Image 1 (cartoon, helix red, strand yellow):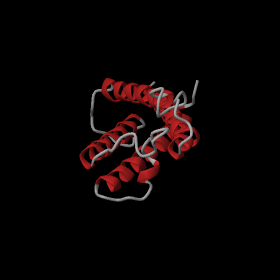
Image 2 (cartoon, rainbow, N blue to C red):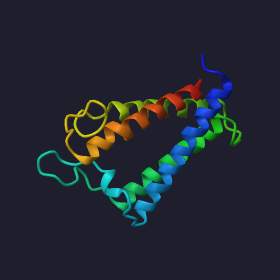
Image 3 (cartoon, rainbow, N blue to C red):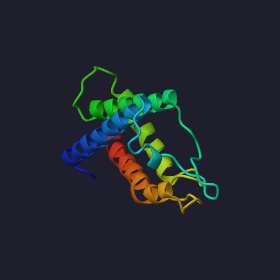
Image 4 (cartoon, rainbow, N blue to C red):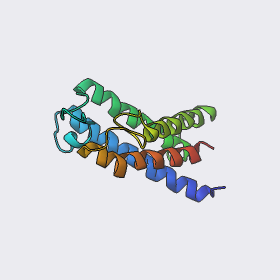
Length: 145
């Protein structure tokens, strides 16, 4: 069992990470370039990006990450929006499952079980992105209970 203080600390860290990720996605949606080439999966043989996310899609991701951070903040008691108790709990369970799914991956370009491994993105995904998603799944999941 995790103590309440540890759960809150994990929630604060997770919410801060989600807010920072939202800010980076907003930066990219508004035309920023820094780090963008390291955040998109690359094709194995042909090189180049496996997808080309547009500004609208990136803005939607930024908004989703902001909402996710908000629900974690609600769950740990930093924000009080007078929502029914079940709603932030349910959202946090779903978020934990989404981040666990991202860590596991799509079996091709992202996650621990990806097949494409020789690209810069794949190396960063194995070392940083997937472990971060696993941490977020755990930290948000702990706070769902």
